[in-house]
Length: 196
Image: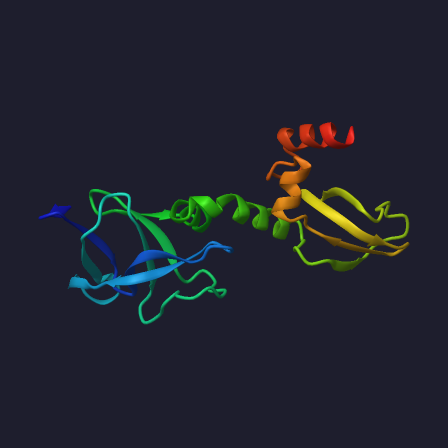
């Protein structure tokens, strides 16, 4: 509920409320910014709620953390903090961390998507040696589908492959979309590039 331009939001007293800030544009780590102190507490025991008078527009992104902790910095913080969207009636709905990062920094959204897809395929931008079975079929100096994304095979032997994810610039130069390799868009691009 709004009072004098403020929106009243309720949160369990065991959590603190903060303004959202993008701590690391490369990874999309959304952390807490300035704190929003509770105006008062209602209830008792485990049912105690912190009542926050939030001076922000509906749709604003906020972060909650366990009381006594912070999610500042760009390190790995696990799942202890959550991103919320403030609604006009004070409801705090959960927002996916990646979507929140893209909203806070839309310019870096494509680079973060590329990074997420590469990591999901088990690749990084650094060349990594991987053991393979005999007859794996990978050839050095090629770009190939790898676990749902694309990989550049730098070197290959009978039982090992040195591979990495292509950089965003390499993907763009090759005409590959920043999407899983099994999407129709990616398949069409691969067929256009390699005739596959």
